[in-house]
Image 1 (cartoon, rainbow, N blue to C red):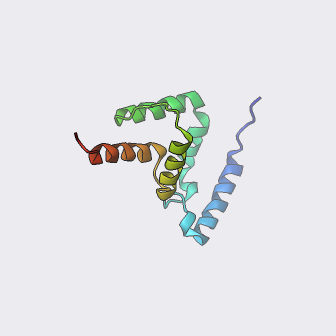
Image 2: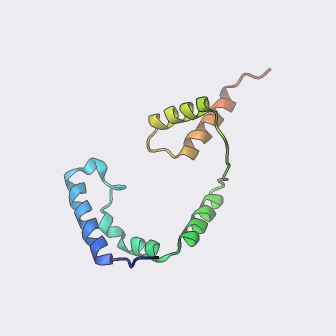
Image 3: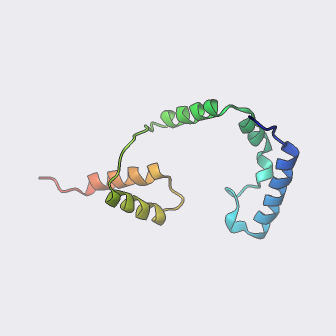
Length: 110
């Protein structure tokens, strides 16, 4: 069962978030007020989830990125968590990609 989207309520909530962002600039969303993104928000709300995901994956493929599914040992999970905590703004893909590139660049050749 779906519920109707109450855009006026969303606008009021975004305006409140903007006031909070002015008071606390350290938590501001990409340096832009949320209320300025209403067209994007409305488009996102009106676009079915499967379509949004398909667009996102297509953009990632255009960038040359590829999805890889891996199972990590508990030790590798701890190492990944540590690396991610050191780079909170980086995505998991960025952290793993950088770690792999560094591992290849620093390995000793026989």
